Each structure stands twice: as structure tokens, then as C-alpha cells.
Image (tube, rainbow, N blue to C red; front, side, top):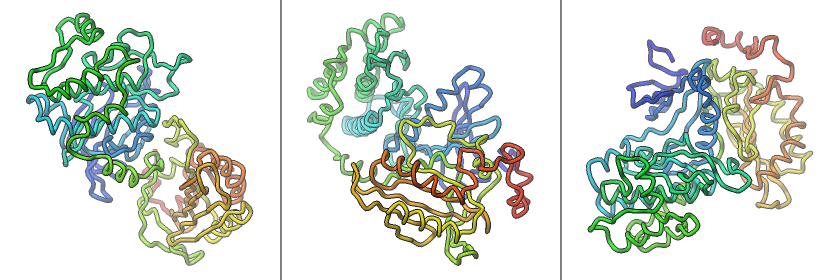
Length: 467
């Protein structure tokens, strides 16, 4: 970050400190390009490496990319320098839900709204094989419209974390919100443990205090293990029934999210489902968050083939070196499924790239539609397991002789796409590829992570930005 100007990577104006922990600080920031408010989490690489939690950071990034939902804090992108990792995330103007509860119990309809949004968010996480494991009001934020945003996936687990018994075994979470089976250390179902925490949160919203609380930690654990708590007199009967099913100390008989959604108390009031489905359909499923590139379409022309192509005019040295394996941020991501997109850089003229894409489509027996702005749509002829396979290839102008091409699946089955990519697209484009993102160039540069000399000649101002 440029301390004098307070601008990070020429992209974000960094402002006041919002909060800090042992390994990270969170700042308010604003996009230079769009003016959008964001929060930037700054992590010290040396500290997390010394204490051995770099894998936890990797997992958190991977998980936040998986759970893109209107009631979950959105991760826009991840950037890095030699000493810092930067999470650019959604700015929740309303602060923590905890701050509201700290003032006292909430009205029933408001508590129900937050609980509905929480359940939909947690259900979405579970559908992606993600278990939060530290749900509490401090980790739930509110946006400017008073909508809930689940945050802090630092202790979350993926389905792959389960042992052979199909259970998770890491004891984690905040004592007052943790499920009894987690305390017992005999293995637990991550989904059931999250449901318990949701029940504790609902109790807190309606009561203004915790159901399980004691100055002696072992005594509190005893109460949790037996689900020993009392309902306040103002709790309605249907809320008591619902909470009794959620705060069941036996995970095998504890209610499920599907049954929570069917309860009369939960369904009363706002009908969120249609709004959520609409929001989900409009949320991009591509992994743009791990990209070192910000698209900016400005009608720039490529003289070579007289076509209008998007131009990445805000390209900086960080963007360029991120194409090299030594600096590629994709190492920070642990994929739980095959990648749905890939990017490569080419020194070839745009006209040759276009010809190669057309030739490739013909060879693979794909229909190809050419759109404005350097976008090409490939469509399979035969229907696959999940419909017709659709692939987009989009060309971006970095300089007059330097192009970025993004290839991504838009429809169909991901495994079928991976086979087509590995056996058809990748070998078919090898003649025009200088480097795939995350891999060394086909002809290794003399010095690893060096920016190509021809590009420096065209953009000499980048020389001063290099590390």
C-alpha cells in the first residue's frame, strides 16, 4: 500500500481502521474505479506462517469463494504482496448483530426476519459442503438495509475434512454457542452442530441473553450437555416448540433445516424464498474473486483485426506478474471441484486468436456464436448429463500486442467441461498460448516472475512498480 496516497494496488483508497485481531486488520476502503465501499482485511504473511495457520487462511478463501449468497459476506477478490494478503470483501455498514442484541431483546418479527435469513444462509453453506462451526451474533453483520450477512469463515470446514466415520473431529467454536457433541470430542455432524448454534442465536435474539451461561466453564458445559435452560415467560408457545427441537442435546433426533423451514413460526411474516432465489440466480457463480484482473470495457480497438475488444486499462505490475506461477494467487485456493474457468496470455495478434478459436470449435464439433466485444460462445451439439455444454471464450486487450483470453463453462456438466478442456481446448490452443495463469510460460523466462521485456517497452511506467 502506498502510505502517502493511501491507495492499495492502484485500486482502493484505504480509510479508517474498522477492527483488528491477532493476525489481521480490517480497513474501510473505496474502489477507485467504481466508488463502491468495501472492507479490506489485511493479513500479515509472516505471522500466519510462523504460527502455522496458513492452511486455515487458504481454507477460508476457498470457502468464501464457494458460498456466494445474498445473506453471506461477499469476497470480491484476493490480492497479495511479498508480506501481506488482502481480502477485499463486502462492507457491512450496519455492523455486528451483537451490537443490537447487547442493547436488549429484539421484537419478535425482527428476530424472526434475522433467523429466517440466517437459516437460508446456513442451508446454502451446507448445500456446498461447508460447515461454519462458529456461528454467533459477533460473526453476523448487517448491511445498510438491515439484512443479515454471515461472516468469518476462519473456523469453517469442508466436507473433505470428515474422517472415515463421516464426522468432523476438530473442537472449535465459542463455548456458549457450541453444540454438546462438539464438546464431547467423539466426532460430530457439522450441519447438526451449526443448527444448534442457530438455535442459541434465536434464543439470544428473543431473550436478550444466553440460554446457557455460567461463570464456571465446566458447569456451563454440563448445562449444554443436558440442554438445561429455561424459556422466558414472553416466549410464544410455537417458539418454545421450535427451540426445543433445535436445542436437542441428541444430534440424531435434533431437527433439520428442512423441518425448521416448515415450522409455522418460521414461515410467518416475510416470504423470503422467492427473493432469495432471485438473488441467487443473479449472483455470478464464476470464480472472479480469485482473479488479479478487474475488467473494464471501454470500447478500445485492436488495430490488428479491426474488432472491438474489452481493454483492461487499469492493468498494473501486480496484474502482470500474477500470471507467473511464482505470484499466482490460485495457490491460495483449495478447489473442492474442477475449475470452471481458465485464463491464458498470448502475444499473438487478435485476428490469429479469433481464427484459432473458430478452428477449434469446428474441430470439436461445437457451434460458435461471435458476440460484440471479443466474446465467443461455444455450444455442444449433443446433450450431456446436465444439458448442452456451453463455453465462453473472451478476449481482452492488455496492450496492442498482449492479450488475455478467459475460457469458462456457462452451462452443462462441470466434469464434461473438464474433459473437453483437457483433451480439446488446451492442446488445441497451445500454438497461441504464452502462459496459462498459474503456470510458467511455455518458454521459461530467464528470471522467474520477470515481466516480459516487450511489455515493459510498451508500458515503461510499470518498471517502477515491480518488487
